[in-house]
Length: 158
Length: 83
Image (tube, each protein chain N blue to C red):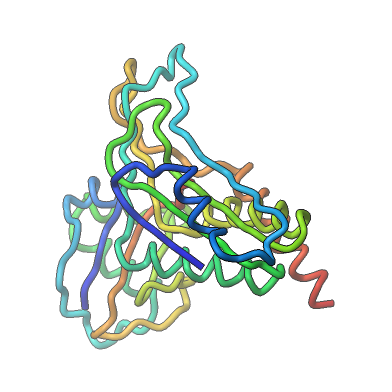
């Protein structure tokens, strides 16, 4: 289990190679990379600044990753999340999970990014061309995405 | 007690972190928030809607009825938008 919170960019290839190096029990790896999106129009984006809560951020990411390792038979897992000023097209986050079989890798990777979005203390401040700086509001869709894993958890308990 | 403010709560209160002496009658998160709201208009406005803020006590998410004590680190922030 690896958690990195950093301002500098990351190299996906390097990170993924390091994650699986030396472990031949891994049969599949799933990764997700989040990027700074700019849809243009009224919401055209100049930049985005990610603020976080140093200390709690790392703690929550480790807890989320530990939860994924409890739920699925993972051989390796990784979360890299950036903070600071980013521009459209920049990488924000990398999540990767590796397991003997693909389904555990697919499901646990989706779980990690869904839970991270609603449980890790990060906040996005957008610098838009039309309206200037504004804080991104939490989305109900993100809550629903996280909740589907809560239900699965309850089902498993019952 | 150390209190941290993040994102728009930091901007609205004008404070990123502070040390406060919490009155001894305050026992939980809700009580602490009510006490902070009495400080000035900026705090009252920022903390009006409990639904729109999140609180962590010693880096664990805390509900309004969660206990708080003088030595705690309390953080107040909006719902998270990372990832």
